[in-house]
Length: 142
Image 1: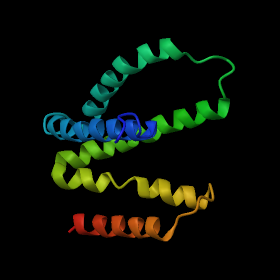
Image 2: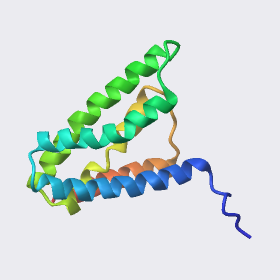
Image 3: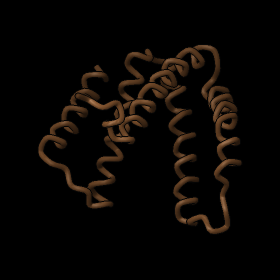
């Protein structure tokens, strides 16, 4: 008998992420049809602040927070803005059904960096998955 809480906690978070990013992609297309990429980023930030400010007050940042972690978090935000502007521009010009799957392959960059810099290892099946993702990107570009 399968217990409801037998799944790892990360899997629940992953499914939540999948759902929210799916809605994000759909709403991004709708908004990009009406607004410029910069306007979309501005209103994306408004929505982000609505969710983030209460979380900041709950958890806070103290002087003892890891400085390198704060730097990584800041750079994450900077790259997120660049990526958002690029995806909003892509959605303004292209179809969501093609743009979102293509941009959704961004973990390939993470995988490459993790293997090269963090020295993480991949097994043959995982490597095959990366190769299939690259083939998918090529097919989407046709």
